[in-house]
Amino acid sequence: MMTGTLVAMLIAAGLGMILASLHLARRADLPWLGFLHGVAAGTAFVLLLVSSAALDLPHLSVAALGLVMVTLAPGFVLFAADLSGRPLPRWLLAWHAGLALLAVVLAVIAFSHGAS
Image 1 (cartoon, rainbow, N blue to C red):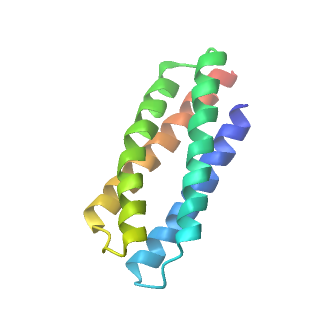
Image 2 (image 1 turned 90 degrees about the vertical axis):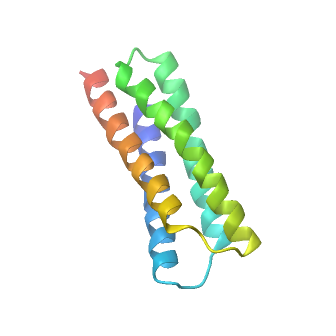
């Protein structure tokens, strides 16, 4: 379950990096890619929630879970702005990416300590 969680998080992160680079380069919008990013992030969230509850993982996994929850709100705002054709605030994009990166790092550390 830990592997699946990390794979889903890394897929979401990879798709997010593609989306951010397309936005910053002012390339064509791909709403379907944003949707896939959201599905991968949502899957990672559910798996992280189940992993944290079912497996006796360190408290870092709970911190990662909290960060993922905080990261979801700006993600929804960015997705809604993109769908409505409004420009995406770069500061919000950076905030969303930074929180997500920290959540992935915390999850990797928590799972590596939980596996030993």
